[in-house]
Length: 441
Image (tube, rainbow, N blue to C red):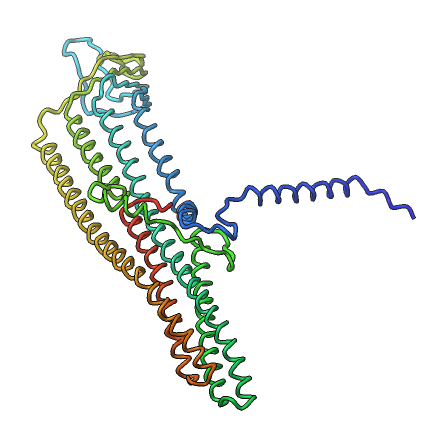
């Protein structure tokens, strides 16, 4: 049976589907390694969270606003034009007191077009500097706002990592208890042990499974928070890579006094630059400004005030504007702006001290956890030896099930404590690096 010949539209549809499938494969191949299930890295998550934050779009908006204001300032170099018209009745006019003289009309009319061009305005450059400094300050303030996302990612990431480590320990403990439960049931069936031994092991096994389910649920919640922060789905079975931050922490700790990587420091500097630019702009307002102007019009009378006819006219000239005396207004305003410098200095000092207190706590936690990890391995090794001996004694019937469960619980607790300390140490290091403003790599 011959196949029907496909229509041209069907051929085009099939080709389009092939192209879409190929594009999807290429897109998946080109996707960043962050979303692969074997490479969830803290640094990539932080960068993705900052990029995904809706406030990131404010950078383009702030630049566009500043560009518009700067364009307005540049437009001041161009001439300005004005159109005016006026009709009025005067109660009196200029007159000539001799017989036969023609008196002007008391009704006057005027329509004119004027132009003005500023030749010299020292305040324009100063006002441009203010706008540029304000743009830099706004961008620095935005960086401060977005920087908080890094710590939010840290919290969710290490929460998931901690629960992941606890799941591994609990899974190993459950496997061991399952083997011991099978042995206890066999012994109870053979009459070599009481059924309560198996019941006790089964109760402990159920409790461990509850703990495992609780850890799995908490990890799912933490990953959901991460997915919301980065704006991309994160697979529940995606492993989290433990960041290696030991060397970076030591380097940052050695140069802590000179570290000014936090965006708040750049914001303080930008705010100080704005204050300085405003002071210079205020001083420039008192300088003289020079303009040329011109006006042409048609009215009655024109420039001849004694004329009774409609006439055209024009005027042109140079104008100098200067206000040498302002009753101390500029001086007081400059003093008020100078006081803002003191406010910025005190805020910068307060932030620096707050940062020192925060890093002092982080460094103390790092030192404590490093000491704890040094002894955790020894504690786990001792608990493993005790459990191995207890397992033999339980197999021989010398040790009760309750005593065996106690020994096994001690080992499980020691292992959980070691994994908790390991994750908490990495979290303390990441928190320290984030606190001082350094990127986690």
